[in-house]
Length: 195
Image (cartoon, rainbow, N blue to C red; front, side):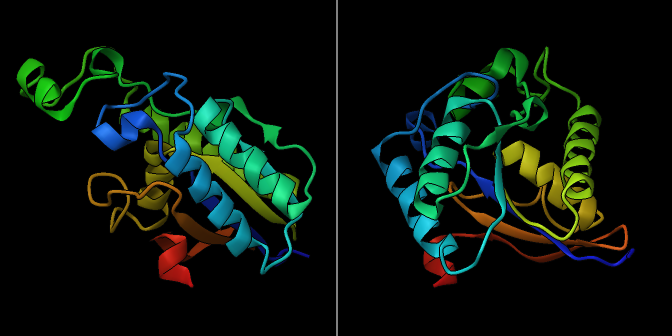
């Protein structure tokens, strides 16, 4: 009974105008732009090649809108919203362009930012909770760059993910959970790279 394989497809939301300009996007509720909506449609077309049981989403608009586009194409139930899937809070650096961030916070420390360890614990707890609650299912989770990267960092023991990997918008990261063990099939692949 212990080794039922649960498949989790972690997806970063499609592009927003803030992503396109390099603004740091944390808890701000920014919606997808046209390119982001198109990316979600392409993701849905790719995901249609497999069967999926459910889709789970961060409550932030950019993730939820991506989820709704995917779930409607895959004829899945409405996305299940889980608050713990939201993006990292970047504190006073939120909304700033790279140059402004560098000028205002040259040491790279952002006042009010969610601590990395807190982000990591939150991400792993919610991910594990989803996997344990749906054994043997195939689940799509739509979340955010820092959240997904903290998961990849944890599961790869720091080999990739946070501090090393720049996740692309609408990238796919495929995980397996079996017998309390996680494994990563692939990560940070766009639909174009997967086809």
